[in-house]
Length: 239
Image (tube, rainbow, N blue to C red; front, side):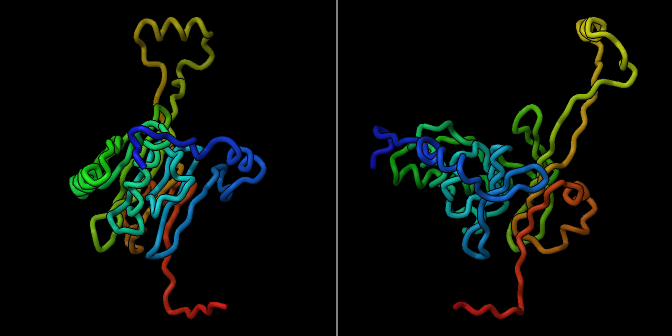
């Protein structure tokens, strides 16, 4: 299929939209719709539609395609394997280039990955690739930002905390009329202050050491913490 000349219908339109209205996917947690799947060693992709983002891409499940932001925790195939397909399929459907955030340590390798696929596929694979180090932040939109935090895995890895960002009126200006506040703003007075709150955190693969890392306090304060758990020593029978 030549992606330069043929475009398909957006996967989130038509009958599929009607079906989703009838039946919500995923689950509701703390006011957020959470979707996706996580099968150890095979595929991990966790989706927050209201935040317009997915954590890791797994094998690129259909619902991940409509998320404009993708946050990659590390380079193991079960977490990043579907990345070229995610970008290529969005291009096929005429969707805008996504923003992909990866650990800075693997950014250059991810760029090389796309170069190889461009050469083979003869397509542009348009996207915005951002490298973040632990502690660095990136604004997803004016009222939402993400910060990378330290995780403990066998290869370079990191988790992400998503914060809500709000502007609140300073206490000394309580009780003023709308015109008075407007005049203060016009004269250059800073009448608000910024507050942030950790909403969602995602660890990716990690040992439990991230819990006792004192720099990760906001991870534990988040309204939702997504952790992939590996259970050992339990025999599972398949019928």
